[in-house]
Length: 175
Ligand SMILES: [Mg+2]
Ligand SMILES: [Zn+2]
View 1 (cartoon, rainbow, N blue to C red):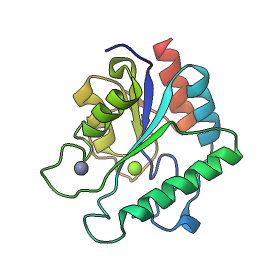
View 2: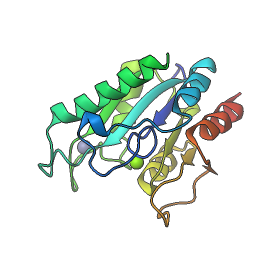
View 3: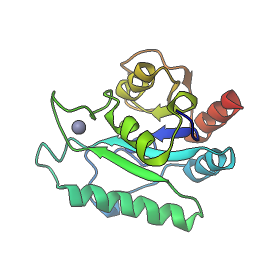
């Protein structure tokens, strides 16, 4: 498939502080270097697409409106920094049976269809094994940013200290 490359970005622990099932807008803390990372991706022609597992919905901890609320808060904070995310996708499910809970590739496949993304030239960034495994299943790089220790999952293609480092590695690799 032709199209532009994308950076498929995890949300909690990658764009914002992972406080555990974050669902209150006041708890949104955008991580350092995120704005500069998004600028790096955009400058190199990458779409920035958030793909996030939000099993708190299926578990009954919060509803889909809360997920949209957090996403809207992120949009607002990024707007203030003059950067943006191109699209948000989330999986509200828990347990087996859906095709979108990472590491299942459903969210990326949907994003590719809806936004004309060339998955083969794209990459995944996240703080957990499911993010890295998602990249591997699609045959594209999985870049790890710091998250829960010890890390459990397949060996990432690159371990970045920040999202900006991840962006620089991905953009350089794709050039
Ligand atoms: Mg995460
Ligand atoms: Zn799902």
